[in-house]
Length: 332
Image (tube, rainbow, N blue to C red; front, side, top):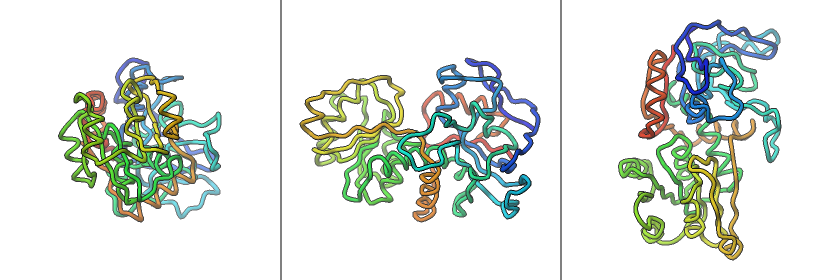
């Protein structure tokens, strides 16, 4: 089968022929129609992700059709259109992931291939209102955003919510989930165009975080502070979230692309603020996220679609950071 394979850290993926996977006990074989990139994939190719092992087929997000099931697996899965939970081994609804938790696409072979073998517990019916490309854009971003907003922050319809760095897959999914929950949503971005697109999705407004005193102008335009703030970057700008947060506010971050941050402890305790770290989610949260997408008929935002042969160009497109939504690879 054809696949995108990382053969050496710090190098581009290679489009090549590899052996088709064989299913093990309790597994299904999925013929992949579409897959989607995450920043995790780019970081792995750059050697910026811990424990990189090669060779490996990258990719954590995909949807496709079940074409084979192992002995003992319910045969009703055959022919079904499915999406896959990218997280492996976080079965219980525990507060944190277990030590052996891992994600499709490293160390296990991932989704940038014509076929993948996964445990049957990892597959779920593809939402019928989504195309193959839209469904492929859903799993990792949807799960991360859902856990951050619903499980960790316990979002309410009465919340005024700020989502930083809108344009990335998780931030956009968080924006859509928060809007669907009835919250008043504002965004930040370094791109005026991305802010305008977020407003078109239902956000109330936004601000360019490269502007001087952006946090002050945002608070003024929003008519006050925020009950809930969702961030993926960390870094020096994180300190402004303490100023933007209302009394008793919650701040959730699921990434640290801008590095470590410092907070003012006096602001933290006087304002009774809560800061939550969050990443991915457990199996029950994945199922809840899928139900939520079906209930509200959410449609993941797709930035662009590439062929598997053009996979290295798709990686470069993500590395440039200009995308609004998910970068999808059509496979079969």
